[in-house]
Structures are given as structure tokens and as C-alpha cells.
Length: 298
Image 1 (cartoon, rainbow, N blue to C red):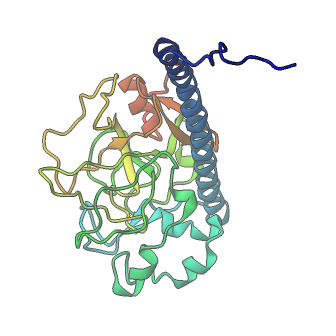
Image 2: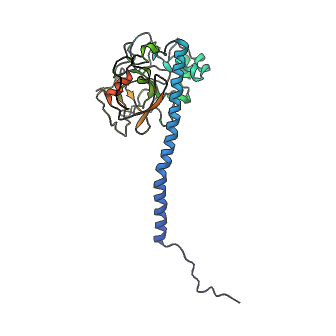
Image 3: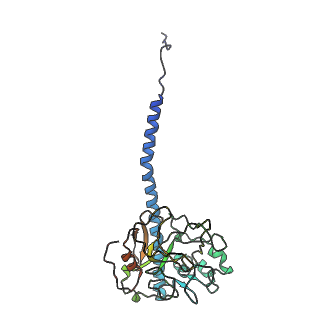
């Protein structure tokens, strides 16, 4: 028995059906992509939280072994300028032994200073715990334009915008040796360190970035304000923004995470700080003995 196939027609997709399928796939991708991005950002923030915790522990171990927190920066005099001139030994260098970086600490010539030629190779070293995975890093390099090892994290030197100097009211500043007894506001109410953002080029000129060995704005910031990213605006108050930035300008904290920065407090706790934090509360967190305990959730 033979079968006649002459009248059988093979059915294919019509143009309308194809467009419908493409639209459905596009909708599914549109629904899934934000969820995937959110999951990735959550993982990056978790990694950043771990980095901040490790740095906080390193600072606490330094205090345990020496009786005081490290100096925010070691230098013969101040105020500190954001220039590659001087000893400028950062707190980051001082806590290297407590970050499982003993070999790097032993090789670093502290007396020669952060920018000495003998330390040139070391200051270009990248240390994983100093880098937030959400941060793109600096757009520029040192004053010669050469890329250097950088840090996403900075210690708190003052409660308002001011040059880094011996009279600052934070925990890590010029030649500081702060003990727990000096933190009169309470260690759970005093900011130890947080994240910071990197500056965008101005008129095509890349900003100077001096790296993690430098006790300048590269590793120290204040609670004068939260630094906004170039493509998003800070939703809180920014009255302390300097009218003109110069070598003595330090700047505030900030992050590349949406809506919040990861912070470590003087008691060792780590948490997220909202970008919309009240400015008075932010100031209070930045001082160690101002007597202005924050009375609001932040």
C-alpha cells in the first residue's frame, strides 16, 4: 500500500509567531537580568564586607600588640598634602603584619618613606583585601602617571572636611596614637574605616592617586560628606563640600555599591551605612570624643 504525500504541507513559523517568540524571550531576559545583576552585586558586597572586617581586625590586632591604633600617617610635620613629597607612611603599611603580609612589611623601608625609589616596586603591589570588587579603581596613577597599588578603603581622620593634621578628631590622623580610653563617645559609635570612591578626570587630566602606602587622601577620609559617584547624585546633605579642591582637600567616604557604603566601627563591628544618612549623624560618627552621640538609626 502506498501513501500519497502530494497533498501534505509542512507547517513553518509565520513572521508574527517568530516575533512573538522573540518578544517573549526578550521579556524573560529583561526579567532575569536584573535578578542576576542583583545577585552578583550581593556577592560583591559580601566580599567587600569581608575585606572591611579583615582590615578592622588588623587595626584591632595592632592596638592589642602596641597599646594604640596605628597612626593614620607618619610624617615629620603637617598638614599633609596630596602630593608625593614626604615620608607619608600610611596606616595600611603599619598593619601589614596583621594582614598576613609579613614579607611585604619586612621589605618595605619605612624610614625611606612611601615614595622612595627603594619602595617603588612594593608600592605597585596589589593586595586583594584592599580592593572592593565593585570598585573600578583609580582613573589615573601617581604624579608620573604610572599605575600603582591602590586601596578602596580609608581610615577616618576627622569629623568634618579639614586637612590631615595632628589636631584631627577621628581615630587615624597625622602621627596619632589613639587608645581605646581616648574614644569617649564609645567604640560602637565611632567610625574606624570605610570605602571611598575615585575621582574622575577633570578636563581630560587624570587625578593623582598615590596608592595604599601613602597616608594621604588615598587611605584617609573624613565624615564631612558622602562622595557621590559621577553618574548618580547623593540624596543626603552635602553642605561640607569644599568650593575648590586642592592638595589639602581630603574628601569623604563613598562606595560603588548602590545606596550604601560598608563601614567598620571602632568596636570591630561591620555594617552598611546608607548614602542618605543625616549629615549631623555622620559628623557624630566621625569624632571620637565630641560628646554628640548619634541618636538616630543610620
